[in-house]
Every structure is written in structure tokens, then in C-alpha cells.
Length: 353
Image 1 (spheres, rainbow, N blue to C red):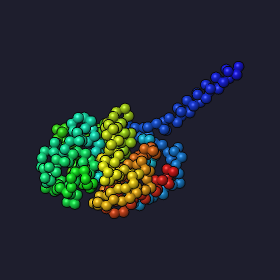
Image 2: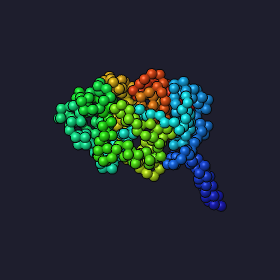
Image 3: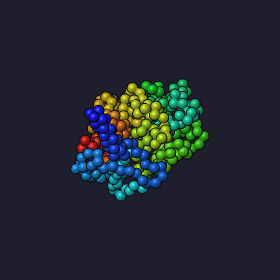
Image 4: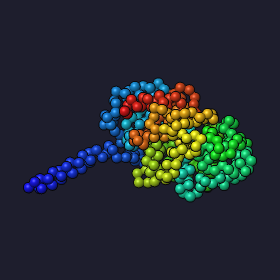
């Protein structure tokens, strides 16, 4: 009899746990919005046991700091989605240098498709003379050097990436410098794929995850514009190691490299991604090394797309978070990182902790 009761008790516990799992599963499982339409599941601050009293101070801070769009995803679901200063959910805005991560991702896709090799020299695709460097020095520059900002080309000559403005300063791989020469990645993908970069991008990334948006030429750069939700879609793809539902859009192994230190000079930089939690970092237009984390208030495992005038994608695997900020510069013109990053994370921490 005791044995029967024991078995019954075990079965009861298993069934109860199973029912409880069915209840909690929708909240904890990773979610992807449909490719077509504006439907996007949500979860609430209350359901996540976050600090509801700190939400309004966060939103007030965002509005004061000239934010236009702000989204927090938890495991793919929208927790907060807010628009300020005349912006709406359907208004496009520019990514600025946060869009470098789109180019990085497309480089990984092109390599996976077998049309480029990141170990190859850039001149294999663009031909000799794409810089003004001596040919021997130009031939040192590989695709990976463009991804890691270590081309050795002079970063003090402005945004122009014509050959005459791409001049030799140091051997590739020996110097880190934030440089717009990365856009040559788009050119070599266009050459290798035999189609415009934007066409290849739309086919192999944008359309596959339901993004909106368009590349717009601005001076010497092609800048991406989209809605805030489209930026969130991209962040969600990268958060899930390149997989959208059951489809692997970009390889996990490539993204692991892209979101790890790409060289030893600036440990806080991957393949056009900024990395938190390292013991030192460099910033644009400087050869100084700063000690400590890139964004002290942010989690160590966070990596980010940072664009001019505070365009942000923060991805935090340990917290299951993707956070998007679009808008005007919070405090003053900047190239990527600003004091706003650390101040914003102080406000976010009050909410999520």
C-alpha cells in the first residue's frame, strides 16, 4: 500500500511540474515576431518582477535626452516601447555607425555563402590601387583588418574613402584606428556577389527577418535608415547567435568571433561591434588606451552597436535583453560612445535589478 501511495505521489509531482511548466513556458521561451505584420508579443515589468517605480524616471530621462525611439526586449518580447519628441513607431531614423554591425553581419553571410574569405587580402576583390599605400603595404590588408579597424591606414584624413585619401600609416594589424574604410567591405561584397550591396543585403538579411529600411547615400557613406522595431529585429537575431526561429541567417561561429576581441590593441572591439567587460579600450580619433570597462554601469557580457549621436543597440545575453535607443545626440555630437551610455545604464539598472 505504501508503495502504491509513493508511486501516486511521484506521479502527482510530475504532473504538477508539467502543468506549471506549461504555464511559464510562453514567458521564458525565446520569441520571434512574425516576418510580416506589426504583431509583437509583450511581457510586462510586473511579470518580470522588475521595479515598476523606476520606469517613469527612465522614460523622463530618455525624453529629456532627446530620444526618439526606445525598446527593451526580454527574450524577444517587448517590455517597454516608447516614442518621444514627435517620433512614432513607423518613423524611420538613421543608424549611423550602429549600422556598421549590419555590414559586419553581411560579411559573415557572404563568407558562409562562399563568395569571400575574410583571410584574403582586400585587393583580391577590389584590385590593386584601392588605397594610396605602397603596393606591398596594401597587400597586407585583409578583410579581417577592415572588420577589426586595424588596416593601418591614416584615420586623420576625414570620411573620404577614395584611393588618394586612404594613405599608409602603419602595417595592417599593428595599429587600431576607427576609420570609415570599413565601407570597402560593402564594395567587395558587391563585387563578389555581382550585384549591389543593398540587393544582397535585402535578400540575405533584411527580408529574412522582416526588417524595414533602406540604405541612403550620405556624402561618402551609405547609412541605414529604419524603424526602431526593425533595429530591434536585428538585435534579436544577433542575440540568438544568428538564428531566426529555425533559420540560421548568419553562422554562430562567425558571430562568436564578431563579438569577441578581434585584436589585442583595442580589446573592447570585435568585428565592428563594441565589447563591454574588457580591462581596457580605445576610442575613435585617439591612440590613447583607457583602463577599465567601456561602460562601467553595463553588464560585463554586453556587446553593442554604437552610432553617432547616440544610436544604440545593447545586447546582454546574461539578462536576456536587447535594448534599442534612437534619437538625437543626448548631450553633444559624438562618434560612438558617450557619457550618455553610462548614465542610461544607471537608469536601466534601477528598473531591471
